[in-house]
Length: 207
Image 1 (cartoon, helix red, strand yellow):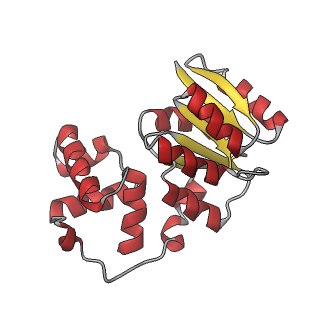
Image 2 (cartoon, one colour):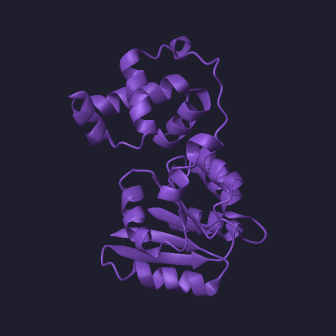
Image 3 (cartoon, helix red, strand yellow):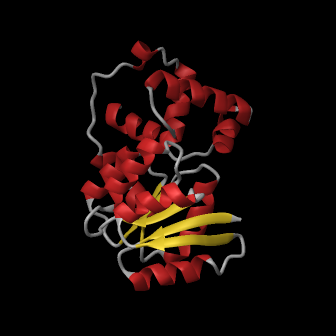
């Protein structure tokens, strides 16, 4: 059973999300809250598998709450929901280390997104993914060799940035999933990054 914490300052939306999620017998809602400060407190108390949170809220917004939670729980699985696809929010969400960013109106994608995030994947709506490369600042003077990143590792980085899973990368490169995981672990360590989302952001920033 996957436990979920829902945070949204619109009580009707929170109730609707709870109903949608609990229509799936593998999901259970551990609690609901209405602002970012409450999200931090409830996350500490409930330790949910996935935090589903709105971005635009009074007092503490979802992005600030995400940063506070990730500072204390680096492996927290946070999926942000919003009615806005503002460029500023997208970039901040990517850089913060959250596991996903979806538009609220895409209700059909919420349950699959939660399950994907729970298994360690990152999820960004198609509309958002298509805009990522143009949103991230590019720095052309970066040299991966300075970080002892070899050609095979760079190839894996590019495939991660394209959104491929470990299994897909393994199939593409004719390697085992375990080998890909080992490569990724080494890459993240060398670049001092936390997860594959940050790695993808890093790639687009420095290509």
